[in-house]
Image (cartoon, rainbow, N blue to C red; front, side):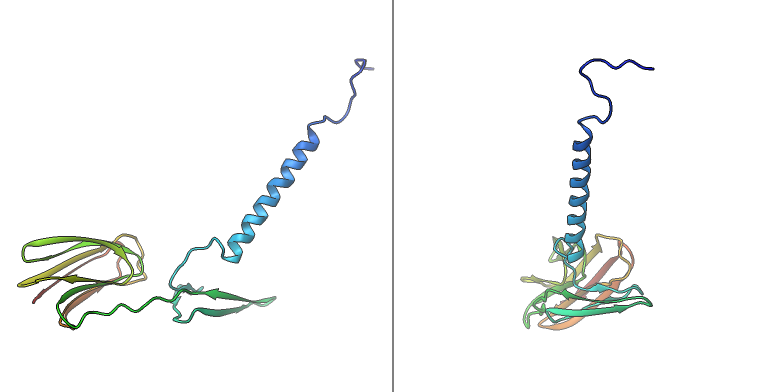
Amino acid sequence: MRAQIHGRRRGRSPEIPWLLVATIIGIVVVVVAALFFASGLLGSSSSGVQTSSGSTVKASATSATVTSSGSSSSSTSSIVIATTTPVTVSGSGVSVKVDYVGSYSGTYTTNGETTKIKNSGTRVFEITNATGTVTAVVQKSDNTATHALTVSIYKDGTLLKSDNTSEAYGSVTVSASV
């Protein structure tokens, strides 16, 4: 039989309750973080809702209700979608309009002067004192192949030339005489 040292107990170590407490706290933190993500408080803001078939549904209202049902359960959740002010082209002058949900970068050139652009969403770039030919070259900054990048050139509110691409990292070049 084994001899026991005087004053020392055999059995559980006093560190074990702290290990149990730390484990429980870790689990609680993970559950709380999961609830924040599930409730949408830390979710991303997008202009549409991705469906299971891969298509995107956009809404112009401030909220929409999505209902899904399966063979064993059904659920309803409310999705808040931010609305944006429509972008309009001026009725006078020359402008380049870029329309893409993601980010893009490129240039537009007129009168021998090149201007760099980098943005996201639909934007209209007003060109002052434009004469001759206006050329716009814009490229997607991401590999999304489901959304089209459209570049258009307008003069006095009238569309002169437009082109688009849906390719990943796709590029569009448009030229028009103004």
